Image (tube, helix red, strand yellow):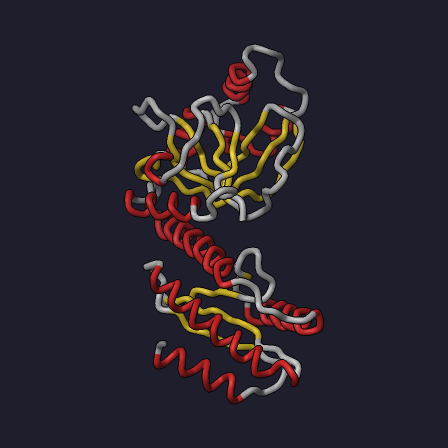
Length: 303
């Protein structure tokens, strides 16, 4: 997973916050898409001067949805006030300032950002053990050197509180934030656990089972993983994991499978996630009473 810290115009961000915008158009002076490792669903953090503060900090974030190349007029027609301004004239003036009085580009790269969340208090880089050059003018990746950086930012923001400007959106924003925190925590945990040593046939079958489960029951694949699925149900995490093995590999796969469940459980509980406890669900090609019985024991008896 990749997260980005993007230097952002503080007036534009404050406009979105006050308007309670959950979707915004994030314009960039360039017409090129420069991101090499940034995909739909990943987080773009707004890095700017908070209200009344001299140093920059993270004031919120949004999910990257899609990218378009558009002219100023097209941007305004498509997104209107979701561009961050009351009028197209105000927007054009902001673009001119950002371009340092150069002509407004004919085309600009635009990022559609969804599910915007603002923090009640800024999170400064030093609060989460992060160093960002004061000379940074555009963006930087947050998790390349330390995959826990995004998790630390979200946890610090949770301590400070989430800015729920619109009461009607309060529960929705809280749920978005909690799911994002859980999503990144599970991705990090899964990376620590590592991959099951499937052969090619087993791996293909496990992925097929998981895709079928998603189509029939819903849920969400743990990021950077093609087999493990999570859902939030009745204030608990439900993790669905396929079990597949060829006859000669049964004992090894059984050991790996239950080792994975135990590690998931331990690491989720140690992370103090708000959605704990965790429950496991197993999907198999044929009936596997032994596997289901041991899974039930982990669910009911703990470790």
